[in-house]
Length: 327
Length: 147
Image (tube, rainbow over all chains, first blue to last red; front, top):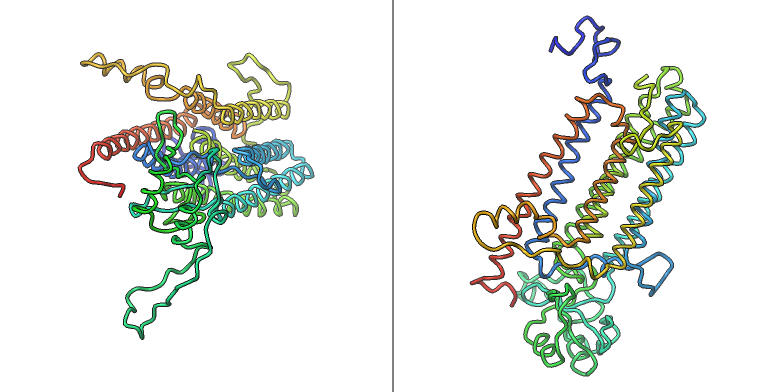
């Protein structure tokens, strides 16, 4: 330790000493090593995503077909645009952050205030976008049927366009018996949430409508989901259909493999949590800048350290964007 | 002051900026262009880039060796290969210019970057091999997974 740390320095983490390891301050170096460990956590998530995707290579959902919505544009097929916009928002807030760091080096308090403020706003917009993205994903799109084996069947018309369950399901009189302990079937509790149509209604509607086909989640040689013929579709639905899925949660996912939804929630959720904590830390630093803490301290290094964290969040998003949405 | 002097040259010194602020906007432009290219490619998905350029070599030791050396163009779709390269380029400029890695001491740079790259590549390699192995087991299965 004596070789690197200036032991003659006053008490405290190598403050004031001239012999600084890597010529970096204690705080900045620890921020860097925290970022390394955090990068490993994220890469663990993304590598696990890759593992699951390789494991189900022939039936993994295509991200383009899952994330097709854009706010205020209903019914418009806009694959990827919204995520691209989110990427730009985050990169831009990274730019304002690095401008704040630069202004800090020059001890320009007012500029730091403006740029930190813009950074916080950018982070907040990103968080809002992510909330919207989650909401859209959870609510779902067309709805699908899950087979007994847990695979997803989606419905198409003759032109190959997706059809929503509500568009063809027939209305059947409801024969729903609530299960109560008094009936002696206390051990079979009822499902907590109910879908807007039942499986029987979907089945009857499908049999009645000659134009409908089923698409499985298995991909053909060209990487498109396999579309079954009308006869195959009927056999498949009657023999294997089990329940209706609308939207996605941790157990069911109308877009395909439930693992896709799990990884979506965990990876973007973990990243969103980092953005949230980044915004909170940025706010704290922002107020410190406003009340002149760093002006009195004579150094804006705290802005630089929190800037490192903020850029790291942007860096992770670049990878999430590629491996979740593009590849 | 952490580092009063900024290294203002990017592209191995071929592009020099006059001030740090100018460099920031320059890097932002570069990142934007890369992102736009990625999004356009991701939406168009050119068919010429959707199938790997080469098929795997069959045979003995040298075929295996060849498959390892040429793995990016044998096992990856060119489109995905392009995406990964562009992502690493973006990550480089974010780290080097936004996080000022360019201005840090060489030892610091290596301690952070090499540690990360080594561990991440290792983990990724292990998990992707394992995932592919399980895929093969499922494909040639004795147990029915889809019923």
